[in-house]
Length: 198
Image 1: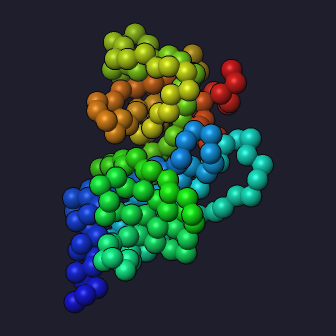
Image 2 (image 1 turned 90 degrees about the vertical axis):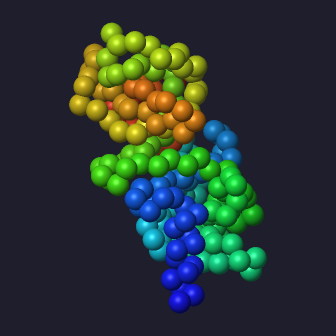
């Protein structure tokens, strides 16, 4: 009975039931401090923390960690394993990694969204967000260089040899960005510029 109540409470904290398995969290201290950690997709009893590193990172690397539902001494529900703890009880979700606390951005995708490398992180080298996958389509916003972008998916449409990507904006309406205007924030990103030093 306790186990069922614990599971139900964790599901209620994380997301509505229909979208629960496709909730992701992107967690990092800032753009310069590796690793950037993608947590998800979440399932009723476990999730995966994936550690992402910038291309020039030459220190120790940590591989994937699985996190399981647990309860803290204060009675809060968390995903945890070893020195990782994803706090879903707080108003702002955060990931504890050893002594460091990383703030997280929440992304929620439909259950039928293809699994794989997305959502992903990219950085802008300048350019614009368009209303659709095409340079001739209306511009929704200009993007400053080094802006962090969350990519929802890569599309079939291409312009000058680069594909278009659908954005995910946790703060409001998103749009589409051209692969020639973005570079990998951490891991290599197929269809984008190979590096941010273009």
